[in-house]
Image 1 (cartoon, rainbow, N blue to C red):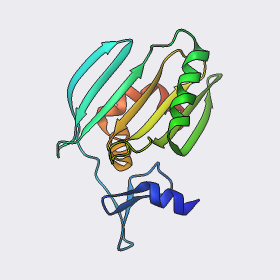
Image 2: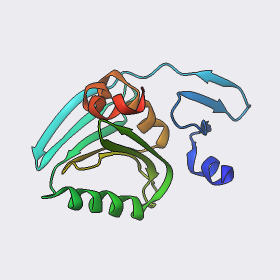
Image 3: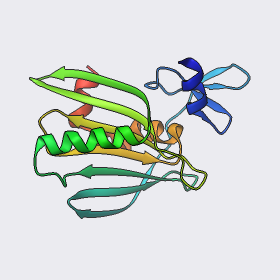
Image 4: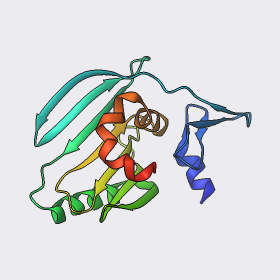
Length: 164
């Protein structure tokens, strides 16, 4: 399993730690270092059945945060999340129970398309008709955005259950 995680997480010469919850980055030389989170700038927002917020990293890479509310029932939302997960490679799934509801966080890589594999971090709370996800061109970038100040308010209702 570690080989699969290593291969899936190999991004620009670095490997995201197996925990996928920390910002520790291991270089190909075997050294580890705590990386300072990058500052992401909010660029645009579009809303219809939910909202998509567009962010940009200091080096010009785009990250999106989607609050998807296009399903009519909680069962439909759960089915949509399952469909998204089935289309890619799930690297990690976490579940937490809080206030009588279960929250789920899934880290995945989409199938390769035109030589690229997008990374997604999907958040769903049982019983909700909405779910959220971060999408970026690499797993490293998606994880960095998830830990950034820019993502903090968007993920607050989910992360309270995951961070204690």
